[in-house]
Length: 269
Image (tube, rainbow, N blue to C red; front, side, top):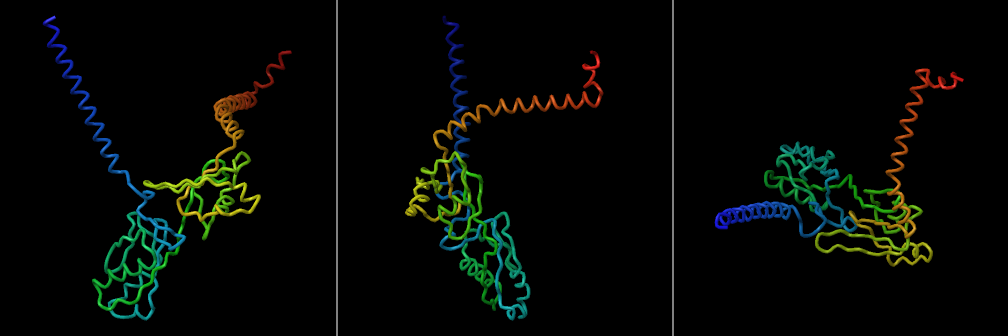
């Protein structure tokens, strides 16, 4: 009895030490994860509402407009580089002559022109008027569920909910009476339940709201459609196994035919 007490004490201490190490590792990992999380927005560096005013994203191409006469002035020749279309770099910058890389993600055309002009005034004395244009502006919304086109779908100007539905299309199993338009956000996400069937049959367009970039269009299945999808998932491994077995049988049959063994069984009789 007396000899077992110190041993049990050591085991207890080792157990506490192991638990402390595990807790320390867990808290360290959780701290790293918390540093990566964001508190608001979608998570991208460029935020805005392109339906109201266009802004620069990572898929855009930028071009600046400068009067041709200003480019002939001494010391301003390199500004002609700004008139060439320039894609956004992976770090969200563009190259401005005489200045270097300038971060532009999230800027509107007016803000971008003023930003570049302000940087140039720090190194040049006679800076001409500069106007920015967003040449290639690709915006997407996401479509999932019972839709014909899943994933990221390019948006059109002034796109509404009905436009997005016909753009994504829907399957025969779609529940058109309950479609969810989800506006994701880390702080205040918004989920709108829309009766698309009512829109099509009555023309009542109260819920035909404007679709914003990065909205999620979720088209759920009907009850029978849910059963059909469940059966499809259950039978998919069986179908794959049958397809594999048929493929092996076809290969064996082709091999027998080439090797001349396909008719050997019939020649015996």
